[in-house]
Length: 102
Picture (cartoon, rainbow, N blue to C red):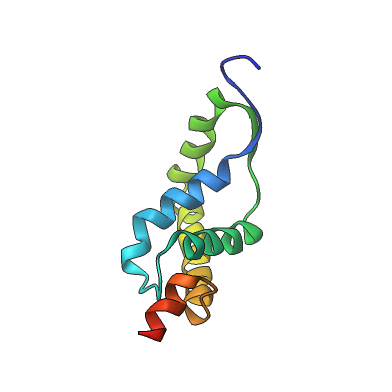
């Protein structure tokens, strides 16, 4: 592959992950281990439209489009918050199970 080629990549994964990490301290998560963060991201991504690229040089443009769209980013945050609430109600990770057992 050439330098800028990434195969096929969903830039929305990066947007969701960065947004989740930015706002996770405000979401009252029951657990913020990697498994729970991945579960939140997966739930959110299932509700959001994918934004695929095949060349990494386009990633900043796709990200900027979402970050500049105030309604779009508000929608992304709302979907992440909804997903975080679902995961926090019933975490599937060992970390949370160990915390509850103590």
